[in-house]
Image (tube, rainbow, N blue to C red):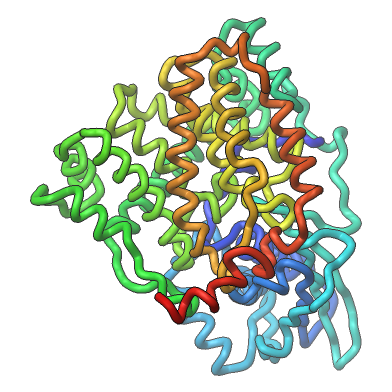
Length: 466
């Protein structure tokens, strides 16, 4: 596979889904940006999982914003509903400077069938005076990655890295030979993608986005959009834990959290609170970091915040080291299996994020490269087979709570690895990645982000009795 930067795994974007929101948004940006012929209309066809859960995942919103050229990394989330209202009222869309007629309910078409290219396939079509002038097919393959039909990356097109990594065994070979950490190898590779200055700027921007999403989630209440009437919980949990400690901004909030009692029960609840906070923001179309996906975006910031607040650390230096290692583990799963729930179920999202966080925490806690990969293996081993059955096609139930569970599992996996000798491990990271991929291929399609199985079909039975 082409070389992957950790900044391909960690993307700043808008919720609620990397595969159903961020990917289609990026595809719409690409299609609109490459329109060279004269056109006066655009239609978009959605297939498979995008069709079945697209409305709950705001796929239609992403397409509308993407066609207009808005950048998901920089747009103010509060402008999105305002723009959608204007498009709906005017029934027009500004695509590359052309004001065209656009009726979202008619021009975004949710198809019943699955496309052969991928479970998350989109086809964009541009018209002029009723005639098709150009079309392009895309697949949103998870984590905000897209593939464009007719364009295939090759090894010759990719960056040639000093330490090419395809499997966990490659990491072990390099770290053994150089007597270094995983993060050291990753840092050297990243220097072949961009300068040291660019790397630091990007890492710090990711960390600021993590902090912002946690703080917003911990200070915002209300009902999540989408119709399930799910009540935000992070703020009330935060207020209960923080007690009478006052705060007015992120820094004073951090001080207030540090001043709370630090028994096991409270720390456990803080970890859950951090994870819930991020994913409640994600569910509200807030700005988060794909880690490696939007649906799993709460695990890594929750574990990182746990480390910063409740463990001895070296601050920003350790944070950057954490992201290097977490990102590389995400790359392993991207290359060897999948990070798309539409392909592999939730093991591909929460499972991968938990493995990423477990490895990163292990390294910054002083563990060896072998222990870090052992932690990643343990975390994934206990997510194998996890299905994706979002109720109402929304990234809310069970997705939000799963981030809290994934964070706790990551910390437990790290503790086990730090207390173990990896030489005695029976299962290794490459084995578990291979197993996850085989499990993904064997999994029934209805448990792959279709809302046609599991909890998604039982909620109507449960609701009247609630």
